[in-house]
Amino acid sequence: MKIGILGLGLIGGSLGYDLRSQGHHVLGVTRKESTCQTAIALGSVDAASVNMSLLASAEVVFICTPIGLIVPQVEQLIKHLSPTTVITDVGSVKAPIVKAISPIWSNFIGGHPMAGNTDSGIEAAQRNLFVSRPYVLTPEPHTPPDAVVVVEEIVRSLGANIYHCQPEQHDRAVSWISHLPVMISCSLIASCMSETDPEVLQLAQNLASSGFRDTSRVGGGNPELGVMMAQYNRQALLVSLQQYRQNLDELINLIEQENWTTVEAKLHSTHQARLDFVG
Image 1: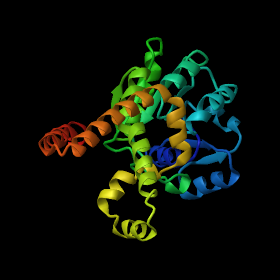
Image 2: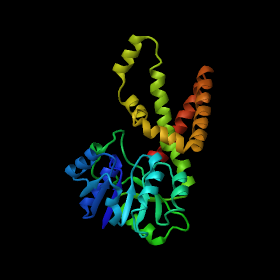
Image 3: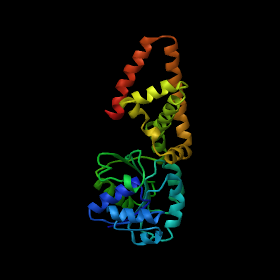
Image 4: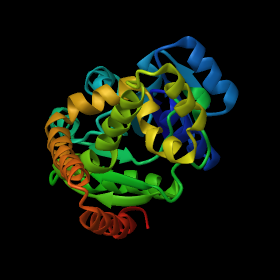
């Protein structure tokens, strides 16, 4: 199968590796000629170009650009495609993307692979990135079943675990487990940097170990991605942040009151609840 990838960063490059390993002919399009050459040299794609016309013969196209570019890029891309071409994206927000693209391309299926790391760019791409990771698909009731099956088969071949849901459900869910943690992690780092004693700050930086590394990781990721999460999933993220603030205020009050029994009960509760997310 000829598969196109628009956007050759971490996700697009990783898709290319896996799809080529299965015998697909992979065509890549990106904004920089240097990235095209790197992707070919690394073996992520068979051919690459800065011109979208390269994807004219693709049967399926994955849109792997930053969230804010997905819709405008698709609007340009469809001028080059056959009406039968299936388009899917990998954006971490679904409702606004599906709402904008579905009316102009019937063979569109929203998608979101829950995989990646804090690095970006084609050099960060890796093989088997999607194995055993959740991969959300958000087809609409009017989406052609054949198009959905095509995307499902490709996703399944990546070793990912497929989940179907409505775009709005997806955005609410990821606001809790993906977008909220980015903002919390960002606030954690900023709070640490507010230490006014330079010696204490330096000591804290020297002592930071696995606990700080785990809780600060996503806040130290790609700033552009974090801004787009907030911009395109604003309402759901605000609800999550406000609920988080209420829980934080509750903890502050308990500690101020030296109510250690309730603090311990809360920690016992969250210890058990965490297993339902990452157990």
